[in-house]
Image (tube, rainbow, N blue to C red; front, side, top):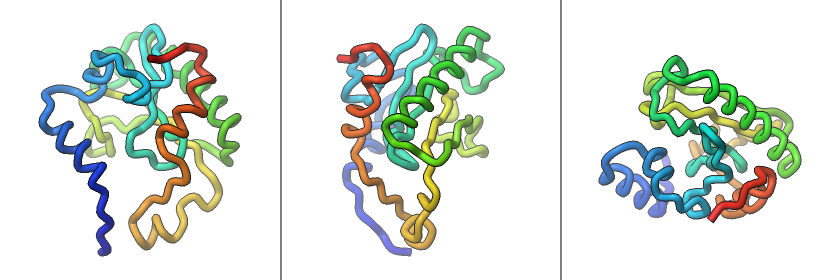
Length: 163
């Protein structure tokens, strides 16, 4: 296997392992939405860009409630999650014109949840051929846009100013 160095990722991993608690709860408390790429804060959930996206525009809807599973969330929270997923899909359609979407939950480590202790809903725009030879053979993702560019494109669709 080839190795590609990404020192910027080490800073994130080292900071996350050094900090006590949940990364989503920490982001909520910090309030530095632009730096943390929080696109919107709703009544029960917030929308955030995935720091390690599968594709450009990959975002997540995260409840304020620190729960590992859907069964621990009230209906008001899950209703707003789906409404924000719809808003997110519309914003991504306007800005990126994807061919399709993956929208869903990974509940628990064995299901692929990167932050298993705090449930979150992924909204991932997809294009025909977006899993090209580099991803399949080289086990590497190539993204044509940085997170700041994605943030600047999408934030205007959520109707709420961030700091």
